[in-house]
Length: 170
Image (cartoon, rainbow, N blue to C red; front, side, top):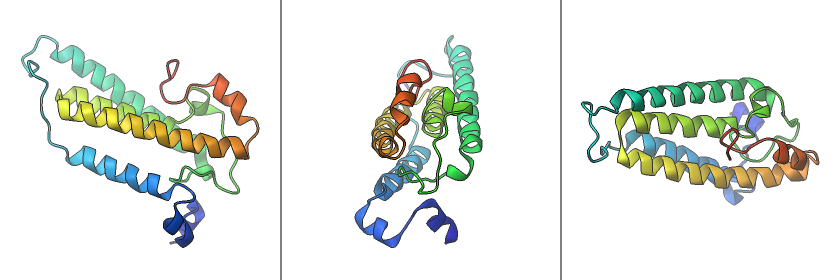
């Protein structure tokens, strides 16, 4: 249980949600839901479609981007890692490595992984779930950024320089 307390989880926090505990729980539920969601294929798209290899190539690219963002994000964050959107008390603002490309690479990794699976499966149900996941992670990132701005005065300048979830776009 020391790991959870090191991450900032407390009994009081679970009662009040003061550090975003409920957002973290909801994120976990959304990810489990995504994994167990049945595949409903896009009408007209199947494995014999002339677009299948192009779509699968895009899915592979999204999967590779997801792996890089997620693994490099974990590596660059190091001791500052916490599943909570509230920054660690003894944490530091990380702006280097993959964090110089996108402000929330772990969220970006999840989004790109969901998109990769959606494209690979030609899944309409997963396309809807990916959209919901994107909206949720954007809301969670907004809450996290409010706390980061309070703790780190330089965060506002960082926001102006680096995109939130999609490099070069958003």
